[in-house]
Image (tube, rainbow, N blue to C red; front, side, top):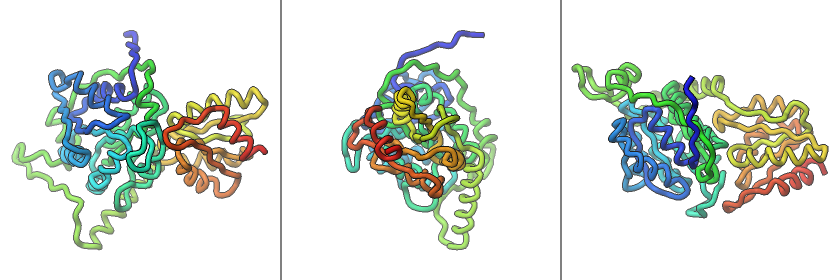
Length: 361
């Protein structure tokens, strides 16, 4: 068995390398801190010379997401990356992609807001990602990495889920995960699909008149309300299937926990240190880390709520995921929030103090 090659790199760099290795056909993006290394790394690697992957610095985020729209409509593995205000600009295009049931990847490395805000880490795009963000009744599949390794691993996973369900997927990392450097094992190279393989996998795609096949027509416009309702009902049935089959999470020291922290991304890493300190003080705390923010792990949160005395939602925002936690527990136990704003990362000691003050008292 070949020895795995371990590399030290940033999370943003891992996204770029993984995309090349996963047979990505095209990247279209615009630089914005703290995710600019995605585009910079792709430019350095020059995959157009090795794999044929297209890399374009678009003139804006609006242009980038519409290039992704076109590439996805052709059945290609395409993606874009941005940070919070840039993703806000992409919302109309993302809604179109979701309505047309196209597989695509959006990478969001979050920064503090609202507005232009700060370039420091945040998790305040939770609502934007998990509640649709743009107009209409739609969902993205949202993956939340907590390490550089997961930044690399989730690229192929996101594409797998996107093509399985013909649905856009988002890798939503906070700025700390994008900028931190860790050891990572990159995925093995897989070749880009041939045109024939794309046609076979994506018979719905607009691949032109090759072999005299009539080109497909892809549009999110439907002027008849009755037909639009049918489209929406089909989407809702698909989302129910995703919720049934694709929930992912990590449980950490939950077996004997009296209190539960629910956290994702960088906050989950902090939570593990909180748990270490708390248990040294005789306080039994566990962690549930949602890996899919949508679909949210509602059932496991509800199950754990029957075991613990209280739940702390640890988020680097003013409290957004807490709404999904409270819906899950249905009032069974107290649910409180602790977070820092403006790009400040919570300290484990202040999180533990909040846990004691809000839930243990």
